[in-house]
Image (cartoon, rainbow, N blue to C red; front, side):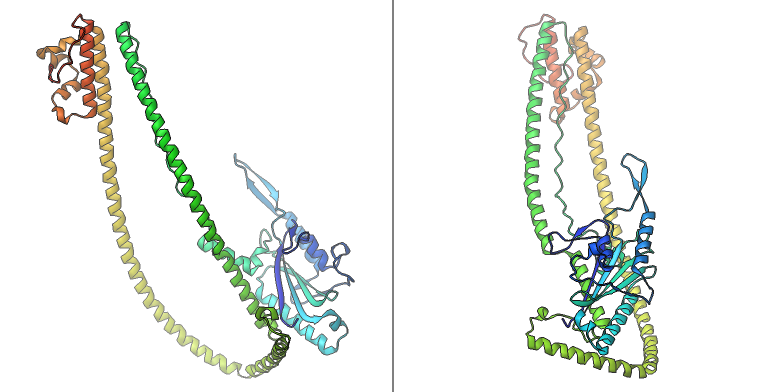
Length: 494
């Protein structure tokens, strides 16, 4: 291996399966135990040897880091709200990641280092110093970290363990560049690829059930009322059945369309995931920055041979070229130090000019942008006012029509009840006399008679028919002809 290797990961107290394995699980206890080469956590090492603890640049011993982690974690209390009200306090959940780790590996094998020359050991010391420098430059303040060097596995490698002590919940995810990038994307755009169903159809309401008529002492009247009620019930049941059938069909149609819609959405979700894209981009950038800070000065390659499918000869040439680049890069850095002051002066002058130009451009762009925003806002406000006015007028018209229909229906029902009372007390037929009609007939009935037949509403026509029916009933009760012909619409008052 002549290319760089760095891996970052977060861990919690809850064991999580290692990717690509079936029965290998890691947690905080396993990570600390493996770093310190505790026997029961180092069974995969053939000949374990004590780790070399790396100090300096703010690093502490792993045992001290574990003590800080456990004490801080045990002191954290979370407030949980109950659904029915109230709350209670609990400790941090076991699956909360509270340990951040980095593994840095060097191409030199452990055997080569242990039996190597002073030049090889100097190369490793240089690499260790660059790793610690780069780590400190990337990490925020308020962290506690420890590092160990292992020389009992295939290659020389470093474990860095970090506790985010400045965070109230010791969140290790806030130190992971990939997870931070994905979280930033979610904060800016919301949860990606959320599956949303189509609007569910609203079922049509069922009609009101007809009221049972009042009982009558007259058997003929009671029989007619019962027959009419049965007809109304039959019509009501048929209407309910039709509405229920329509609601069932609408729900079945929505189910089919929504299933197809969700299926297509899941296919699109599998094709693109912007959160993962943000995660991968951040991790690739992290590797690029690491190459510039550590890999390149140490003569390491950015990518391994599998990335470009290099042959053995090509890969050897690439490694030699990387070593040459590292030497040239060191010489260039020394030469760059000689020109630092001159470059700084030029940069300062250029920065002043650039800032002045950028400031003028930003001011002009801000003026143009604000003008465009004002115009767009004015258009949107005008459109919204027009829509709101139209909706208000439409609602007012609907409310007026509904109110009129309701008043007319209530008046019609009241008139029919009043006519029923007149039939019962025998004063209904007295309305036949045109002279008595204006005094005895209900007001709503008089209003109907004053309306042209072609202009009468459904309620008015129903009241007219009901009045004709009551007239025939009253005539029969009063001893009139049994089969009295239906009265024309011009009987007294019509």
